[in-house]
Image (cartoon, rainbow, N blue to C red; front, side, top):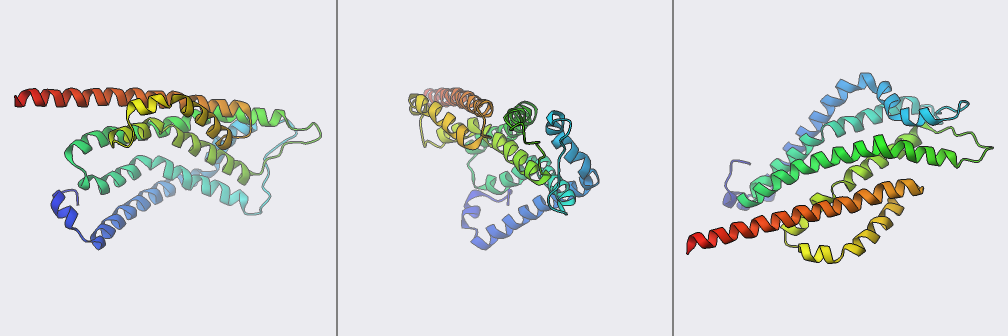
Length: 257
């Protein structure tokens, strides 16, 4: 598909697009399966790694528990599958790019490649930020507010769901600069329009953080502040991109005179 010209691509019937999409999906599933099989022998160690921030701050008499009889087996296996998808993320995004790239113009491809690479880096950065900075602070805050008559004993499935949502939330949130660039490049909004609505964006970031983050003030701030900074970073990159585009158009017009 990547070697076909744009006119032929536009004339391709829907069935050929679906066949091409299926081929990319098969590749994605195959790579995730290979990584999963390579990691499945270390599923217990992976769960020990992801649960370390909680285990470190649990009271002496506390431990993690498994309410469901199969949770001891299923939780590490599910974590291994999620880890395989996480590791395969660059390949997944590349397959998505390979599917849509033939339908893009040359100037769109020049912009899309840096955006694709940036989205990968930002996603992993967001996940790392959540694991190394946010997770332990959020857990410490929540355990501190436990009543003295209650001994914290977290179910391993519930903890895995909590951590997965938190990591994905921050990974997606860190894509804000990419979203800003796409909105500006596609002409949906202008840089000046986004800049003029900065105060509403800040309020929206805190509101979104209050809804999406764990129910504690530190986590809300640790999500809202990066969202605001990432928005400003995306705005800065969009300004630079717009200036470069205007300069290129000016040079082209001067060459034609």
